[in-house]
Structure formats: C-alpha cells, structure tokens
Length: 216
Length: 253
Image (tube, rainbow over the protein chains, first blue to last red):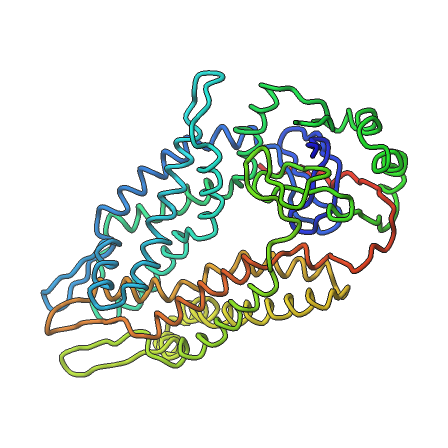
C-alpha cells in the first residue's frame, strides 16, 4: 500500500488528477464533473478562528434570551429556543423536540467547539489529542446543522403571529441573525481541508516521504 | 506533494501507470473530451474522510492517515438509498394530510395542514411568504424525492445518459434538502410561544413529526447515495491512463 501525494481523486466522480500547485485564492475543479477538489485556504483558514469565536459568543446570546414576545389583550408570552423545545417535549412530541434541538443547538455547537479546539494555536510539534476523531465527527455533523433554516422559520412564525397578536422581537432574534451570518462563513469552510493542514502536513513534517514511496 | 515533481517521481514508482500518463497528459489536456481514468480502474483508493490517495490497497485496508476504512464506493449505496427513499415516500402522505398544528382560541379550534397554512398565507396578503413556504415545504421535498429516484434508477442501470447533468442534479439535491425543515421550525416556535392558558394555545400535530421524518429520510437517502456511481461503467471505454490537471479558477474573495 503506497501513498500517492502527487495525485488527487475527485470525491464526486472518482476521476484521477495530478495534484495542482495552487496559488493564492485558487480553486481546483474536476475536469469531468466540475466539483471542487482542492482550494488554497491560506487566508480563509486564518480568519476561521476569529469567526468561530464570534459564532460561539452569538450562539450563547441567541440561546439565553427570548427570541420573540407576543402580547394579546394584555397577556404576554415569550420563548427561547430551548423553551420551545421543552414545550414540544412535554406535549408528547419528543422526537420532533429532539430533531429541533439537534439541528439548531447540539450540532452547530459541536461543530463550533471542535473547530475552536482544533484551531487554537499550539506549541510547534505538540500533537493535539483526538484530532482525527474530532475531525471525523465534524464531517459527520456538518450536513445536519440548520441554524439558517431556523432563522427563516422564526421570520415566518413572526409574520404568521402578527395577524393575531402584537409581536415584539427579542434580543435573541438579532443574535440569531448575526449568528447565521458568521456561522455560514464558518461552515462554508470544508473540514476536508483541515485534514491537510492539521494531520497530513504534520505527518509529512515528521517523516518526509518521497512521492510514491512505501509508507510501511 | 507538488505537481512539479510528478513525472520524475512517478516514473520510478509505478511504471505501468505513470509512464504513459506523463507522456500523454500533455496531449490529453488539449483533447476535446479527455478520457479520464477513474480511481477504481487505476487501482487507487482515495480516503473518503481525509482525501489521501492510496495505491495497491488491499480490500479491507484502512487509511493510515485517518484510520477510517477505505471503500471503493459507499457500502450498499443503492440499496440503502432505496430503503430511505421508500420510507420517505410513505411518510410523505401523512406529512401532507395530517394536521401540523392546532390553534385553540376562546372561540374556536382550527387545524392546519402544510397546504392550508400556505393557502392561509396566500389569502391573507403576504404572498411572498406563501411562495417561500410553498417552495420549502412542498416543492423541495417533492423535487428531492423525484430527483433521487431518477438518480438511483439510472445509477443502477449504469446508464450513460446525461452524466454531467445528473452529477449537477445530485449537487443541487444535496444543497437544498435542509430547507424543507422550515415548517418544522415554524411549528416548534409557535408551539413554544403561543401558550396563553385559556386564551390562545397552539399545539403541534402529528403531521409535523411525519414531515420531519420525510426531511430526515430524504437527507439520509442523499447522503447514502454515492455520486461516483453516476460515472461508473461496466467496462472502461479506453485503457488510456491520462492523468489531467484540474481546472484552476481564481476565487472571488
């Protein structure tokens, strides 16, 4: 079994290409199916840690304050995201409650925390424990985070309610808006490229292998 | 590591594969429709997680970089996709027929299905939102089911029909699937918010659970579908092992 660092295979159509040397901000696309295969992530990766921290702060604000408050004939009612999940759970809709909780709270949080941990600078040559497991978890969780869909859901719900009651937007609504923007910037970064910078680069540093030479 | 070192290093490592490829790569780049070798035909195994390419890997090999198993294709991809698709089609019926929420006020009780919610929006004046909800809750799931059935059937028949268009269709299906969760979120938030005892109360209906399961099942179906099956052929058209360079575009930043 040989490693072929000189080759790159399209994930979507299996076509074999030579690994290109990318200059700044260049993207390599598959010649057969047009899928993105490799991208120069230099400057984007530097921005990833600050964006992750910003997302985490927005995440905390968005989940600790009420999203909207309604007022109907002098009676008011407000809810946070977790509050809505709890009500759903109590009404016997525990599966739906779990689905909402996982896609809007759990999975985005896992992604952000894993990224934060992986991107924190370490002393040179220090191996971060659990990198490989965490990267795989991140890749698994990535399709299931749906904060931006939730934001649209909030807006639809607000319009729906505005016919029936007075709707007062809460702090968390703005926080969700901001979270959606920064989180989109974070998750659009494909974790596949982190393998290269965090794992493969270290292997090559520690044990320089010539192209096509057996690893074992 | 870099393409610069390609011809020299390759010739030493694997004559059968690389000798011709180094020589032919140049011509292939200028050919109108270069015949590409796929990894499966070239005895190469790309790791699905970290992208490392392995040559001469045994059948049960694990990637030495990230330790995940090296599969040529996703395991049982078409059968799994079918199973999820059939389940999603079945759940699609109660998702559209059962009420997704019940609004109880002092005077009356009103049950809403997905469609009646859309019609309510349309009649009530905010037609923009009616369109958004109609697309996200009705068109997207339907489009996903139909597209995935087309993709799975044509992949099973190893059809060569419109390969590029089918690959693009798969990309679209993957990126829009999540948006049909919209109605689940709307109902969840309304349920959590409108809980004014004895005055106005919204409860979630069974339909929302069915609808959520359609979204999850179609997402699982598209995740278990292996897009590389679109390009697989029974026998290679040509054994030309040209290894082209990818297109390189300047990214907008």
